[in-house]
Amino acid sequence: MHKPSPSTIRRRGFSLLELTTVVLIIGILAAVATPNWAAVLAKYRADAAAQRIVTDLGRVQSLAYSTSTAQTLTLNVTQSTYQIAGLRGLDRASSIYTVDLTAEPYCSALVSANFAGATQISFDGYGQPAVAGGTIVVTCGSQQRTVTVDATTGKATYQ
Image (cartoon, rainbow, N blue to C red):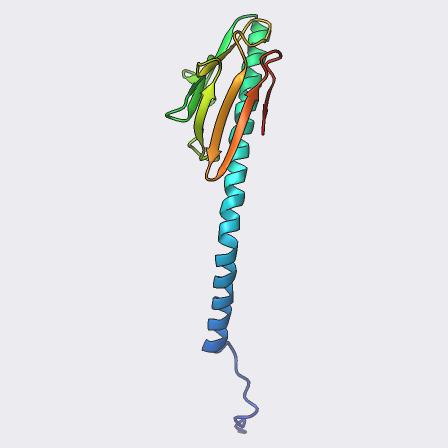
C-alpha cells in the first residue's frame, strides 16, 4: 500500500486561532447590537401599551354608545392596570375586563392618569366624555408615550 506524504494530507476542521477569532468577532457584534436592541424593544413595548389603551378607550366609548348607558374605564397607576367594569374578562368570563401593563408584551408602567383630577374616564350614553378629556402617561425604559382623550369627541390618540 502506498502511504500519502504529509504534504498531500488535507486537514479537516478549524484551528484554535480561527475559532477564537470568529468567537471574538461575534462577541464584538453582540456588544454593539445589544443597546440598540434594548432601545428598539422599549420603543415597541411603549407603543404597544399606548395603542392598547387607545383601543380600549375606543371600546369603552363604543360600548357606552351601543348600550346607551354610561361606561367607565378606571386606571390604577400604582399597579399599572386598568379595568372596564361593563365588560367581561377575555380570559375568564366571570371576571371584569382587566389589563395589566406590567405583563408581556407590554412590560410597561403607568406614570399618571388625569381626567379632571380623577384616574377614571366615563363616557355617557352618547359616547361622549361625561366630565372632561385628559391624559394617560405610560413608560417603558426610557420611552414614554402620552395618550390624550379629546374633551369634546372622546377620541383617544397617543404620541
